[in-house]
Length: 105
Image (cartoon, rainbow, N blue to C red):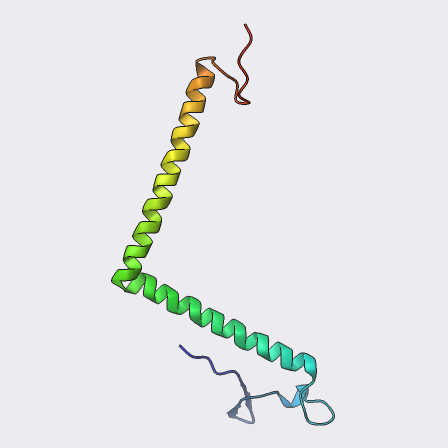
């Protein structure tokens, strides 16, 4: 996916600055040049995101990558739940408070 920067001027596609952004000398001012450069970078980044999404969801390699990341996240979530369950069981049994201190009797 490629993106050409430009604009319509008098019914045709023109690359470069608009007439309104040209300075008195006919050249674009420094800020407009910078804006156009960043605009092109953003368009390129968006194109990269779409390309990545197409590869992740449309290829076997992408499916394997997503499956691995999902499994890793599930394992981490399961570990966190087990840690919470152990802490809750410890609190319920009166062994320690949630701050790790023993309960006084």
